[in-house]
Every structure is written in C-alpha cells, then in structure tokens.
Image (cartoon, rainbow, N blue to C red; front, side, top):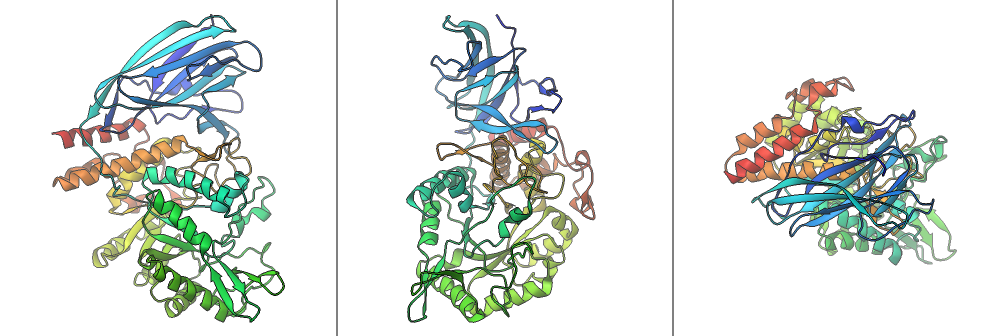
Length: 572
C-alpha cells in the first residue's frame, strides 16, 4: 500500500507549490476542533499527501483514472444529522509562477500524476454539537477498498442565529458581458440571463446589496486589454441600455435588458442600491479613443449605443443634447418603475477634480433626483465633493490619509453611506491570489473599527483569458480581477477567498448582534483585537503601506478566536 499522510487544518490555510516544486503543506497549522453558529458552516481543510501518482475522490461511487490504474484514495466525511459539502481544491498560477490553491471544484474526483498534496475544503452544517468523522479508504484497480485511516473532530454549535438580512453593505461589481463570453451565450439572451442568475445567487448568499447597471458601452475601455500583450483577455463591458433612432430622427430608449437584469438580482434577494456606471468619469485610452464621441460634452468619450432604424447602422450618440436626453430618460424610467430612490450614478476613480465637477453639474441639471456614488482613490476628492456625493467609497489608502475628514463627514452628514475598497493597490492588506486569507478575513473587523457600513470590490467575474489556470492579467496582481471562477456547466465555482469573505461578513454580523444587546464596546474591542496598529492613519507612508505584520494579525487563528469570543459572549 502507498504511504499516505492525512491531516486537518483550518479554513485559512492556502496551499502553494513553487516553480521548483516546493510545497508548504508542512506549514499548515494543526486543527483539533470545530465550531459554528446555529445554521452556520463549520469549515476545515483536509490535506492528503502521497509521494507517488494517485487519484482522490470525495464521492461514494467507484471511479477510475483514465491514465491507468493507480492508487485511489476516497474521503468520506459525515456527522449526525449534518449537511456536508466537500470541494477538492484546484490551483491557479500566481504572479511568481507558483501554483496557489483557490478554486473549489464541484467535481468529486481528481488525478495527481506527480503525487504531492491534495487539499479538500469541507463545510459542515450541523443542527447541534456533534463529531465530524473522516474516513480514508485506499484501493488499486478493481480491488476492494481498505479503510486505512479514521479520525474525528469535535464540533460545537453555539445557539446564536445571525440576522437574515446582513447588516454589512457588500458591493461586488458585476461584469455580465464577461459572463456571456466565458459561458458562450449571446449577450442579453435567455441563456445569458440563466447564467447571470446562477452568479447572482452566490452573491446574494454572501449578502450582496448592490446591483451593477451598465448604462453605456465600455466605460473602463476594457481595462486596457487592447494594450495587454503578455496576458491577453477581452474585458469590454457593454451597455444594458440602447437607443433607437426612428425614421423621423426621434430617439426612443430601450431599457428591457436593464430591467430584466435588475429583476434577476431582486428575485435572488439583492435589493440595495442600483449602481449605474457608464455615464460619468468615462475612462480614456489612447489605443481605443482616436476621437471624441461627443465633442463639447462634459464626458466627450461617453459611449451611448444607438441603432438607426432607417439604415440599420450602429453608432453612438454624438451631441450633448442627445446625451442629456439619454440621462433624463433613464431618470424618468427609474421613477416609473419605482426604483429611482435606490439609483446611484457611480464614478470609478475620477482623477481630475474640475472635469468631475463639470460632469456632476450636468447630472444635477439633467437628472437632479439621481444620487451620486463615487469610488475615490485620490484623497483630495473627499473634501471637494463631500456635499454632493451620497455614497463615499474611498480606497483604503485614501481612508487612511483622510480619516479625520471622513469621520467628520460621518458625524455631520449621517444620511451618507461609507464603504471602502481595495483593488490593484495596496500590496497589503488585500484580496489577491497571493494574499493571506487572513487579509480577506480582516475586512469585517476593519469595517467595524473604522465605523464604515461595508466594502466594495471592483471585480467579481472580470476574468482574464484562462482564469482556471492562470490568474494573471496585465499589471493587475493575480486574482485581482475576480473572486469566483467560471464552471463548465454555466455555474460559478467558489473560491477560498469567497469563503474567507463570507467569514468576514459573519464577523461583522456578530458585532451587530452585540450592539443590539448593548455590548457595543465589547464588539469594538473584539474588532480591534486583530489590529497591531489600531490608528489607521499610520498605515501608509504615501501610497506604500507599512509591513502587514505591523498592520494586523497574519495568523488566521486570531480571527477564529475573535469569532469564538463573540459567540461565547452572545451565549453568556
């Protein structure tokens, strides 16, 4: 029989293999017990190491490797009355060429032709405290299995139920055109909307609040994909709104795709703000934009698609008056459908204060009831637009630079919503493929510590060419463009980072429950317990962060201690 080693580790471990073949499995912390809240998941990872080629299965049926007979290991996990979900983890190429575990496969079998380590993510939802039993079987060819290992983990279920509606405001931007491309469906077709709904459900399960509406073509100019020779990808996003030019020359608006998109998310339980992109702060790329589309407009590169019924030709609106008509028509349609109060016109990282002011002034003239939401990576924008922006979303570096000003705005203008975000910066803390999972887990505690309402991430599914194999894209750190992966069946594959974000949001909900019991100071102390430097104003020197170990706890166990302490306090 093949010598195999079986061990348990926590959900925060991330397996890696360097280009020279070195693995980090030996560094995984040992796990001896599990705990969960009522109806919540207890999660852990199983590491199975074997020195020669093998296959692994988490199912309960016979399975054979197409590469010929080799040792087969089968894992069986059970707990009385519990629902158990297992995911064999798959690895993605990281920035340094390493393979890094992130993808959670739904397939129950996988070959390991070079031997080494397989990591299996396990989620257990048990109605009460119990034991989780793990059995490992081994077989070769058609010979019967032999039970070669059997271990168990005690599971404690705390009688604490999280609120059905998460208090954490999660805003994951959606890129539906990329869904159509990766799943090979026509844009805005029935097949495309079926895919969209599957992804929307995974977002709703996290507690997603915002619905991303693209009201103009290619507002990000494809994230510069035309200039990216090293890691090519198609990242162009297309409008859900269209105009038709009648034979009379009159413009008519088509909101059908937008309405259907919003309906899908609302049906899945996402009913927060409707975030409209593509109408202000349109990015300009020299390789894409050889001429202004709307000369004299505050947004000269705005791309509002139109079809001429007389000729059948496609074009873009090209006068400021027509752009005004488009925006005013959108406001009117949102009012007629009862959605205007939730609508936000969003700008992504405006860099020019006078230019953005011109755009804001036009919006206030043409559609004065549409509120503004702005992702800010230039701290000077915070005091400059404090009175007109309803939803502030500063980058983490901007938060730290303008922390006192943001807290002043929070105190004086209590109706504003405050989120924060990370993207292609800073190096840490962040949610890249190379980032520690503790950095993702930090999001809940840090949001509480800063007194903010939630967190934005710019890309849930903005995939590079082959995200299942290689997470790199251009100058973006690997994994920055996405949080889940495209499955061959049209469904998303979750990730280790998705699971860590789910835990971060649960942490925030536990703080909220402590607040409801008059124990807010205790919640504040728990959130601060994972910070090494509680004064966030000291986290950056310019754009560069101080070392991660000086910012926060890097050990995932610290965040599990926080969660257990919150649950025990709620049970006291």
